[in-house]
Length: 335
Ligand code: NAD
Ligand code: UD1
Image (cartoon, rainbow, N blue to C red; front, top):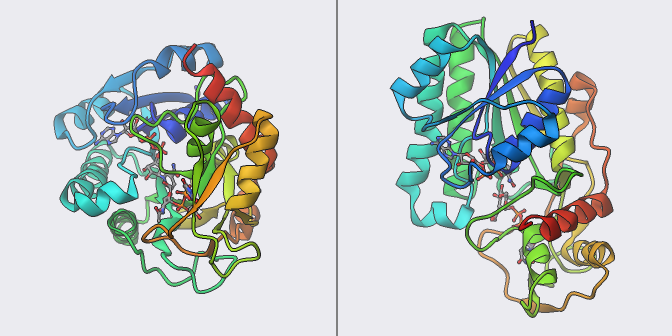
C-alpha cells in the first residue's frame, strides 16, 4: 500500500507542484489548506495532471480539531508542511499575524502529529534564515541572522523542530531551505498565482510582459556585483518538488533533523533574469533603475552539495527553462 503524505498548504504555489511530484512517485498526496493565498480551482487542475483525485480538506492548520480529525481519519505516514505566509513586506507590517500563522501553525501541526504517532516531517524553510550571507555560496552551517519577521518565523519553527527531535529519537525531520523558487509545471496548468501584486522578480516580469505595465523596476544597479544588480539562486519549482520526494525517501531511513539548502548553486543578476525572460516571451521588457529595496542583499546563492550528497538531488533545469515555463503559465493561467 502506497504511503499517504499530507501536504499542508498544498493548494499553494510550491505545495501544488509537490503534490504532482508525489503522485508521480507513487505516493498518495492529500492536502489541507485554508485558501488564504490560493484557490480551490487548483484541485481540478491537479486531478487532470495527476490523473487521480487529490483529497483536500478546507481548514486551518492552527485549528486543533481539524488537524486531530485529519490524522484520525486517514492513515497519514508523513507531512510536508508548506502552509504559511511568505510576503516579506507584509510580515514587517503585521508581525503578530505572521508569528501566529507560521509559528502557531507549526505548533498545532506537531501536536496533532505527536498525538497520532506520525513523526516524519518536511518543513518549508527559506534562505531568509541566513539574512545577509557572509560568503557565497551559502552552506547550511552559515550564520543564521534573519533580517525579516518572515525569516525569524522560519528560524523559530526550525528551532522548535530541532528541540522536538532532540527529545524523541523517533522523529525524522527535514528542514529544507529554499532559495528563489520560480517557474511552473510544464503543463502550464499550475504555477504561481499571487492574489495581490507580485513582488518577486519572475512573477513581476511575467506580469509586465503580459500587460501594458510599462516597465520593471530594477532595485538598484550599484550593488557590489558584476553588473551592479542583485544576484540570486533561481531554482525551478519542479526541481524543488523533486527534492521533497527525495527527502521523503531519505527521511524514512534517517532519524533526527536534516537541514538542506535547495538551490542550484549558481547566481543570476536581475539583468540576466530580464534577458532570459525576454528570450522566453519574445518581446523586449523595458526597465527602469529604481532605488534599492529595503532589506535586499547584494548576493545570495546556495551551496547545495549536502542535498546532492545525502539525497542524490540536484537541480536540472536552468534559468531559460524557468522563464519559459513561467511565461507559458502566465499565458495559459486565465484560460
Ligand atoms: P503560497 O502562498 O502559494 O502557498 C501557501 C499555502 O498555504 C497557500 O495555499 C495558503 O492558502 C496556505 N496557508 C497559509 N496559511 C495557512 C493555514 N494557517 N492553514 C492552512 N493553509 C494555510 O506560497 P508558496 O510559495 O507555495 O510557499 C510555500 C511555503 O514555502 C511557505 O511556507 C513559504 O514560506 C515557503 N517558502 C517559499 C518561498 C518562495 O519563494 N515561494 C521561498 C522559501 C520558502
Ligand atoms: C524574497 C525575500 C525572501 C523570500 C523570497 C521568497 C526580501 C528581501 N526577500 O527574496 O525572504 O524568501 O522573496 O518569497 O524580500 N527585484 C527587482 N525588481 C522587482 C523585483 C525584484 O529588481 O520588481 C530584484 C531584487 O532586488 C532581488 C532579485 O530581484 O535582487 C530577486 O528578488 P525577489 O524575487 O523578490 O526575491 P528575494 O528578494 O531574493
